[in-house]
Length: 60
Image 1 (cartoon, rainbow, N blue to C red):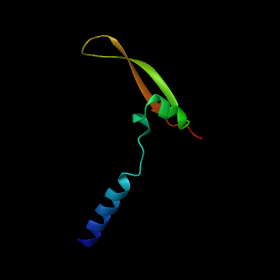
Image 2: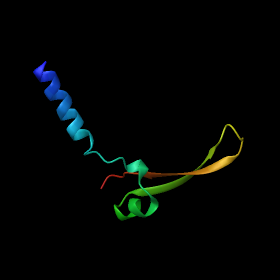
Image 3: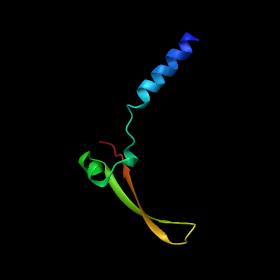
Image 4: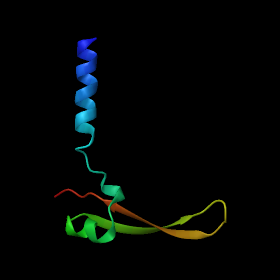
């Protein structure tokens, strides 16, 4: 039981250390050296195309 509690604590403590690159804004993405892309994607509800943006990490 102690090892399970310790394991969960470690996982919880280090889960905040990862940075989700996809949620960054345009300026933050470019300042950190990542690639910022805007794509057209189809909205199935309306039948119209919308622009969606995404920040991609590239090999440095």
